[in-house]
Image (cartoon, helix red, strand yellow):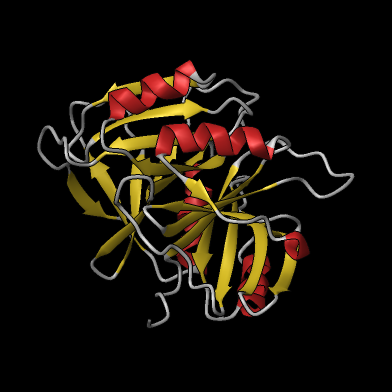
Length: 268
């Protein structure tokens, strides 16, 4: 398999104090099965959709307390060089580049507006084994109160071209997309007043489901909180949730689309 283009979303994982609870929840909601915990890597446990690796869950490191949250990793050919670039462009490296056996190298960082993300330099683990199929990663959006910082930082870090979504029916819409060549790989949404001030900026990860409403019903039955939706869009029917341990995520059924695709304008 050829190396993924730099900046491509390539992996997602989350830290949970109750890993067994997370496995049970996401197994029910997304149909995941799980591999063996890898004790030499902090009991890192991969999740599978129809036998394909699609994400992972891990307990906190001993003595560490962290809010559960999904982390999206962006591909890099050289994690150390990307770490230097993150600092040069005004971001913060939260965890220095670390070799993970022969799987690859990772780092954790934050953009100037506080959005946390990961970087992955692939070794034998190249990332998602499936995308956009039930249970797999579908899409992600940067949610930030300082959109101008994200729109400057991420295209300086990776070779993204930025386009603004134009929708005259949605007043004060501030949504951009980041493209790699002809592929749209990320969205960026300004957080409005509907987000309580204590909710930090974050990267929202979408997982594919066969039926958005059924997935929402199962998630809320299992203790998740519905934050938005379900809602129809030209991209699919989607909803935003917070899982029982506080990690935000979204689900989308991309087979149920409604409406015309929005117009885009280039951002210079």
